[in-house]
Image 1 (cartoon, rainbow, N blue to C red):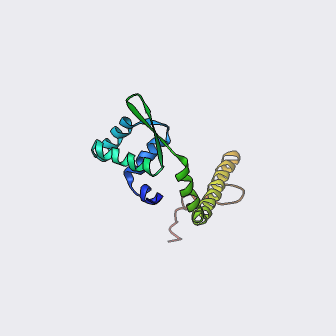
Image 2: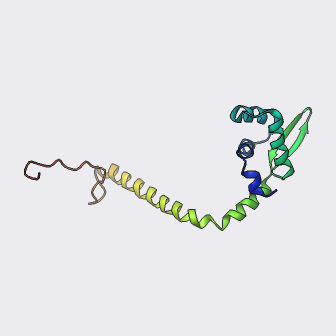
Image 3: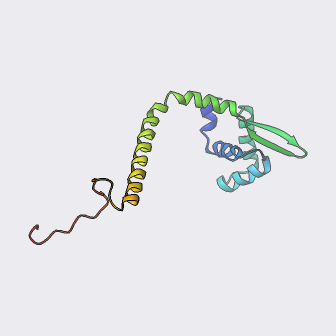
Length: 135
């Protein structure tokens, strides 16, 4: 199965999100998934099996419990595949970062100088009300 076939299922994505916080027992994962998705324990077990067989998670026995953990290699492969598409959102994120920094700088300047930044009008101010002559 291709990585995106595995990740295309919302239940499997949620299981990976839960395991990203650290190793968890199958019972704990099953309880959360059953609550959130309303699926049976055997269905949760099936999703865990698909994740295990595809290499996205590992399982280790500890007494009667089965502890699952994320396996990084398949996620790195997805990251490598996504790399060619990062250009499409990186520029927008860079532009957002620039705008956030500009806003932060303007707020700091206003706070330090008690008004709009050096000759720049405060675009957030309400327009002055019109007089009878202007109407």
